[in-house]
Every structure is written in C-alpha cells, then in structure tokens.
Image (cartoon, rainbow, N blue to C red; front, side, top):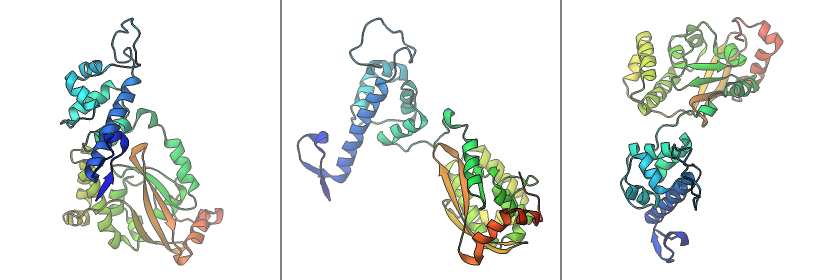
Length: 307
C-alpha cells in the first residue's frame, strides 16, 4: 500500500510507502515542535546573560540549547532538523529540561523522536484536584463511586459506596487488600469467585508497568501475607488491563444488586483512577440504590455511613 507524500515532506509529489511517509511526518513534527519550544524560552529563563544585543528571533539559539543540555551543537541541529540520528532518553530529558517542557510535552518529544514515552507524572499545577473529584463522585449518587491511587489505596468514596460496598473507616482502605480480607464485602459479593482472578490479573498488569516501584511491592507483601487465595491466583501469572467488571451483590436490606464497575483514568492525574458503578437493568438495581440513598433507606442501614 502506498500513499501520496504530503507536499511539505518531499516537495516532489512522488509516492512513498506508508511507513516512510509517517516517518517523514514525525520528523517534520519534531522539527516544528522543538523550534516552537525553543522560541518561548528566553536566555534569562535559561540562566544565560541577556547579552544586550537584540536577537533576530525570540528565544534560545540552537547552540545555546546544545550547551545547556550538554550535547554537541551539530547533534542538536540534526535533531531539530529531523535527521535520522540515534537518541537516548537521557539526552532527551536534558533537552526537555533546557526547553522547560511539561510532562505532557516531554512525553510528546519522546514519541516524535521514536522512543517509548516515559510513564506520565502529575504536573505540580494539577495536584490539587481533590475538590473537583469529590464533586464528581458525589454527583454520581445514588450509585457507588470511589477514587483510588495507582496502588489501589482508596482516596475517597461516596455515601453509596459505603452503603452498598461496605467501604468504611475501619478497613485497610486498600481496594485490593480489602477485596480479599474484608468479611463484610465477601459476604455481600455473589460474584467474588468469578471476579477475583480478574482483580489479581489487573493488579499484576499495574505492577508490571512499574517493576521497580516500592509502593506496589508494599501492597503485594501485605496482601500476600493476609490471603492464601491471593497467593494462589498471583502464581497463575494472568495479565489484564483495567476496564469493566460485572458485580452481583447481596445487600441485607434490598437483596440482589447487579452493577457494572468501570475504571476511568484521569489524564491530568495519572496516579488516580475513578471507579464508577452503574446499575444494570436486572433486579431493579437502580430503584434499590435510589431507595438505599433515601432518608428511609439510610435509617434502615445496618452499617454506619461514612461521611
């Protein structure tokens, strides 16, 4: 299969293979991206003296970026020209530091340079999002919703999650550990056996993405020491991405509830996941959840509601 080469790629109007056209496009994007990022950084911002003379173009010169990044001037020129040269994560990180790239821009630079982007990080300006996330899960009422960090620690949950899933202050507040060790949740979950292997496989996938992360090791050590069932399932080496899980729950007040949990990522907060539980049509689940969240339902709740 061949496609016409974009005019700004060769200027010759010839046809090239798809892979070559995509590579040329990526190099063009790399050139324009680096030029635009270089233009927005002043010498003063980069720690250089202003020099006193007026510059023909704004921002840093190529040679200045090269010196500040600790690379050769010719190499950086070739990089910005989109030439086919070898690059390393260390060098790209140095360039990203000089150009004052955000985490999203740094990962974009990796992709344009043909490397696998690093794992997303939380930008300093995005750390304080908890109030907005609290409003989100409270708006999901009367359906259960909670937010957990990358280690499956529960950051916050709404009242419905307390009423239906048994989330409460007295447990470990780690969704993986509690899945295997909380007797209240185990007593309510009809689908526990069916879903347990999926939960373990998803956690293994999360661990595999960050093999040197001590946070995952700590959770793994805790749940391994607390649950022989987990140990057996972990040894099966299954891997799954997070997505949707059907849950069947037996609530002591309303009976069967059938919900579908969906894990949503927050791009600005890659360390967090939102877990929303949507009622399915079976067993009048939506109506039962609405009743449980009503004043009458709350009065009949057998367990305290976290507030």
